[in-house]
Image (tube, rainbow over the protein chains, first blue to last red):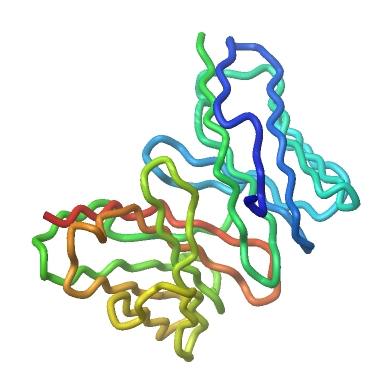
Length: 107
Length: 116
């Protein structure tokens, strides 16, 4: 079993839909990154959080340390949100990467 | 936000040659840099952790003599793939971390290596 599980693996949506991507992990962590990887490969860190909730524009990330679970939400999704979203918890000073969720948003 | 520049973004080389990839932190001092490899449709895999002025720490299964890492300054780390073979073809990504903000990593744009 992977230490980091993301669901769903693939997700398609119509423009404007509310998107939720879930991440569960089995190891103890100090913090967790949500990353966005575009088709060209470049990676952008969307959030780093260790408790509660963070919001940036249309993106919201939440984490429940006790339940070892984090979610990434995208409100009013747009085709430019199409990318792979990766959950990456910090464990023993290293990032552990989930397999990613491939999101496609159609106009 | 902090910027990490990775160069080149794409390289093709012949089997047996060596390829050097650079990772620079442009507006901060990176005490630690990480090198990752990603195969198509797979997750990132940590290859090694590089601390400025000291030897890199390689993950299990990564050949240190094949993947030479140098972190000679607080803004530059290099990864050299020596005697490259087609199976080394992959996407290589670096990230950098400031000393005081241990949980935040800034990623380079990646280097796509194709070995013919």
